[in-house]
Length: 548
Image 1 (cartoon, rainbow, N blue to C red):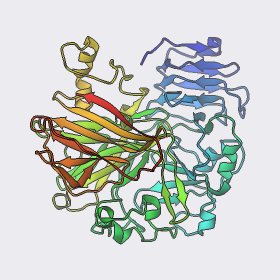
Image 2: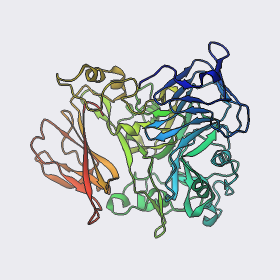
Image 3: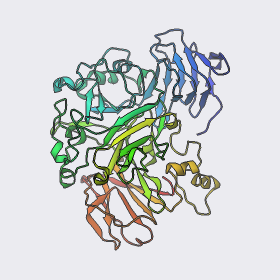
Image 4: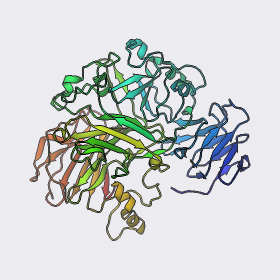
């Protein structure tokens, strides 16, 4: 990232109390421009002439880093705004962990499509009631939270509530009542159904949504373990068809959250819907999830080998991926069968292993590993060795610290050169060679020393991405035709093939790997699901070498 020297408007509005601490008087406008870093080695205090004022005074379109504490004399936080211009241009704030933060600020995000029924969002605030954060949208008092947690208050009443929060332990969206305090690591749903009060409030806005609260800067420690009503794990051995129609604390069936998938792939699947954890970016900056190296991983597992196992250590017990939803992700309520559905895409990154020398590396989309403010993500153990692990339900712990906070919009901007397509051939520039030899990126599994190549293939319909991308992976240690029976309901997928090039028609996959020394000059077959006659489709490809 290009780090200009401090570039601010109205520098006269800033005066230094000491060499380490900064006080900003919002009597005039102060602006941090895009691609600009405003670094403060001590604390930042914002003083204000009107404690309840709503006029923007400190406008952050770039990046502000504070090593000490933060406070703001403005009670609404409307005077200090992290601005949102586009998906690749928005203000970020990093405040070091273990410092005192008491002042409010405002964070913008693009206005949600009001055709949505539910809007996925993280809320990176602390020590503040959810109703105060939501009401800060307009400064009014429209929050509805009169349904109690784990209580069936009637579906008509429940679906007029403003906010829901994902409950990992009971696999449901809990009610958010009037006394609920924000937990920044959790995923929330803004309820936009049926002209709810929050939908009406958003409909009155001009420009992006703006929520205010005390920014969370502290380390997050969060335990993950799947369960059903009552935090029970008795569904460990059940197939999807056996438990999807069970009723949760709110008189809803579990398939209303996960989808009423049917057919042999799902009906007999003992893993589907379990260990699928919805999480959130708890910070007011981007979140880097790439480092899962032993000793520094942000997620660890409890397996038969012991507690606090990194994804690399736990490779024999489970396979692990991260995926997040795009900003335009929509959820619509299907009145015919009561299930939610999405017409937009998710972005996935899969952790893989080089069997030859036990290196671990990422495949898939690097964008899945960089989560922006207000964005949420999933962790998913897409394969579990229940025999070796003793159970299909895995205990995990998430720890998000200063190490995961970053201003980088992608891995090219985290102090690194390059344009995204890399090769080790002799004609490569010195910058790309520097990237390919970057030890930090190698340790994170973002760059490999071996001849890994990835083809990303995704389908668009009328220029809208459909479902997940499919990935074709090859290296000289991968095994051709390592197929299991599987049927994919994604818009696009690959068929597995044997070494002679014959398709294994009942083995479909989103991540097809083959050995580039024994599978040469043979076909690679692509499948499609649920295409609509008369629509315009396009295949889109990205090719990566040595690095995603």
